[in-house]
Length: 94
Image 1 (cartoon, one colour):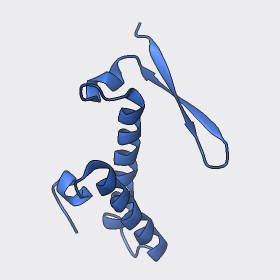
Image 2 (cartoon, rainbow, N blue to C red; image 1 turned 90 degrees about the horizontal axis):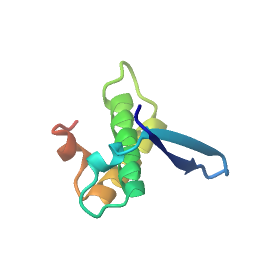
Image 3 (cartoon, helix red, strand yellow; image 1 turned 90 degrees about the vertical axis):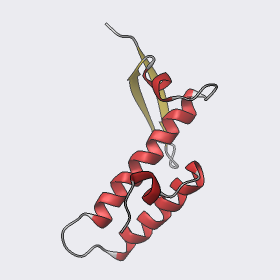
């Protein structure tokens, strides 16, 4: 059986969620010397950016303007964190 390690996420309202991951999995995605919490943060940013993109650009029908604004901000956050646009990272744009 593989051991696990726990990462804690705290929301702006003080609520807390613990996420259990297999020990060593975070290391698979880390560059040399990178802190595990940075890796987990990177993956959270990537996941939210990809999901926001899907909701805004691949949904059927009209997308509310507030969702477009949220996606735009998420794309900005992604680019600021990774130094590359989401479009370039994904290999396509809209």
